[in-house]
Length: 169
Image (cartoon, rainbow, N blue to C red):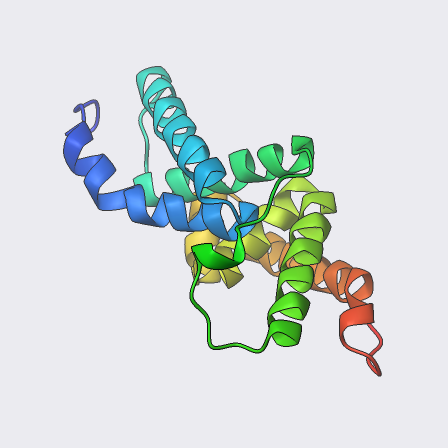
């Protein structure tokens, strides 16, 4: 798309909606919250586009999804989990409970990370973006990406050590 050219919003949303939703869902663990964040992300992207040209829509949308999901996670009140009948699983109940607890703790731990570390961690581990893609999306150096990822992993290892006995950060 040429500089200053307005994007086809229907095409932009269709092309990125699943990724934005997936990022939000992985961070928030709630379909409803992820849908709300996804709508907010596209509205915010539209406003940002009006203010200045966007170099990478994928980078912008993933970053916004990450940051807005973390914002929502930080202000979240305790919510009701899905009922047993709402999902089908062949996983043993104790394994399922342990995984759910780990997911809650991971969300809590990610929410406590500094913003840049959280964004880099989510983009790398949840969206499988390369360090180069993250660098471009966040407009930071490759070294900053590597440092933020390392620090985020170390903090998360420390905070989640109880879930993996016998390891130390």
